[in-house]
Image (cartoon, rainbow, N blue to C red; front, side, top):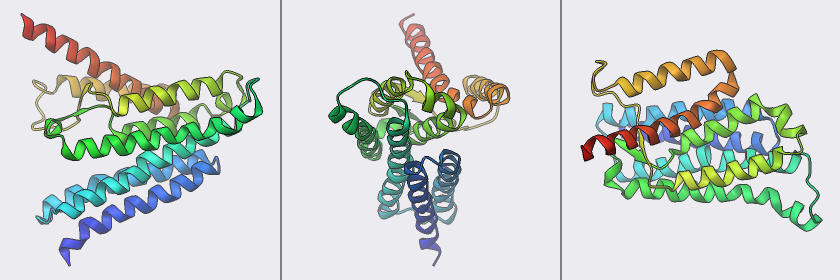
Length: 237
């Protein structure tokens, strides 16, 4: 029985993703964010349970990716679809305006590609190459809640969402190294980057609420890029 527990937790993640997707299509962004967050909790505990019970399996790994692509790939695409469909329409031919919201599903495709690469890429044991799918999903869900009024009323919102969607899709499959919040120990030495990021993220959340949660993700990308540049510079010297 215990070997099925991690997979059951993974399926809970998948169900959360299905509900989040439905709420995304209905433009109920607060509910979509809640279900994505619930999926993220299940996503954490399925691996934790597998390691704790000693029942890791190949099918569990594949099932985890399938669930993640729903919760962290398809659900944020549904949110972007609604943002593009419900926002103030630019002056473009009707056929383009009709097709425009469907561009959102590029992100679901890139999320699937990112997850497939992660499963096969042995370089990502201690960090990530490209933006993790949960971070991307939280970005869009939090942005839709925190900046909902601007995203639905500003004439520039559609272009902002479209540009952000393309950028984030590229980051998902990029080769940019990004640090993981995994602690081998809790001393400051060796974890200064992680502690600094956590402190800055807490400040953003305190100051900006849910919009701050969306800002945490660009901060994560910027900190990762800067840290990589500094590391590369130090290695040259």
